[in-house]
Amino acid sequence: MKKSVKLKITLWITGLVALLTVVLVSMALFISNYVATETIMERMEYVVRGNIKHIQATDTTPVIDEEFLYYQNGISTLVYSRNGSLLAGQLPVNFKTAADFENGIIRTVESGDNKFIVLDMWLPYNLETGFWIRGISDVPDMDYLARYLLMVSAITLPVFTLLAALGSWLIIRKSFRPLDRINATAKAINEAKDLSGRINLTEGDDEFSYLADNFDDMLSRLESSFEAEKQFTADASHELRTPVAVIKSACEYGRKYDETAEEHAETLAVIGRQADKMSALINQLLSMTRMEQGTEKFTFEQLNLSEIVKEFCAEADWEKYNIKVFCDEKVAVKADKALLQRLLYNLVENAVKYGREDGEISVSVTEKGNSAVLTVKDEGEGIPAEHIEKIWNRFYQADPSRNNDSSGAGLGLSIVQQIARLHGGFMTVESTVGKGSAFSLHLPLIRE
Ligand code: ADP
Image (cartoon, rainbow, N blue to C red; front, side, top):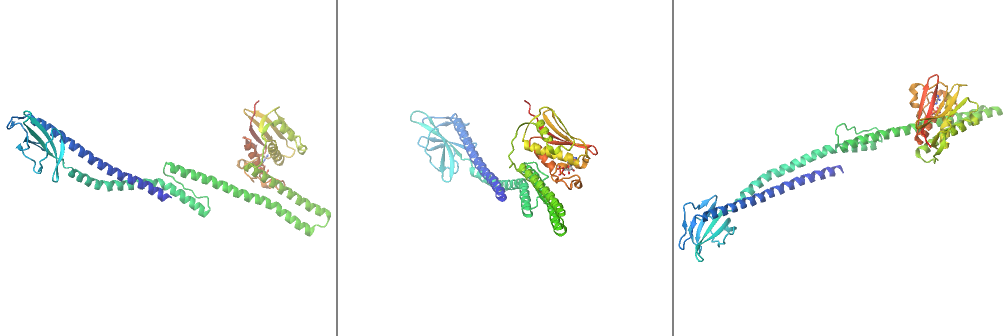
């Protein structure tokens, strides 16, 4: 492909230059021929008419004064009798024809191999007698000009054509270089199945360079999302493998050593907890994927965020914790109720998990400017600054040792953030180590 495009453009430009040179040379030839002939004809008329003033017709021989110019500027003037005998003047050497006289008409007359321009004028004495005055001139030697122009074009045509071919080939080759690099990079990526290759085109500021830059950006995005996918799969398998291993060893242990019904029940409880953990993880993974792919149907409707929060916190599950609720009367948002409940669950569950025992958890809903803000605040350990950016990442746990027995695997906050974004909102977190954390959801507020 690349060869043919480069070659096509070069051939086109070269052909055009060659054609243009030929056309220009022919035009120059034609124009100079035309101009030279025109000039001679004008001169001829001027000389012949000028000479008429210096000749007087009589009934026998014309009287010619001394100002009569027999030869001037390549034009010979001759005087003939009525029947065509030469009375005065000298014929040009090669003019060997006895051309008929035609009064006042400039014309070309051939004599052997030579061409002449001829103008006759009738000078009457009376109705019967008079004289012919004839101007004769060589046709300008166009052969010489033509030979000269042909010689010039024999040199210029190949030189121009070569220059055009070379110049266009160099420019096109240079311009197409990024394309070659893009091709090579794409090929290398394809063959090595390695997304880390880049075109890295540093020079140039044209369309191809933009294409190369965009291509690099696209590769970076592809690479990082590919890496994230790989990481996600590895993390998910790892998280699932742990409870499976616990279940397997509990089964083995139980089979070998459990004797009493209590011991069996104990083993089954371990297995049950691990199965619950797996099931929770699988549910989380599924809902994340569905949200991402948009396969789960949501119903976004106008809701009172305060009402949802109050309803949620009043559920029996949370009774044993010290949860305080502060809500504005009515804070309207457009949201999917089930998703909001899932978000609330994850935030409150974290506040319980990472909060101080007997510490207070406060859940509030307020209006701030054009936003509805839902905040879940705890009085726990807080999150060290070096972890705070990463807690939203999938499977990220600031301190995995604290989470051994719970169902969490570092997906909760990632889901929370996904839900916030699905609603056109975002999450923020404020945390002080040793004092506690506050997670806030910001949603566009609906005003009535
Ligand atoms: P999980 O709770 O399953 O570990 P999350 O995505 O919910 O996963 O949270 C990620 C990490 O963020 C947690 O492991 C924890 O280190 C930190 N974190 C989340 N919520 C809080 C909180 N309220 N206080 C302190 N740390 C928290």
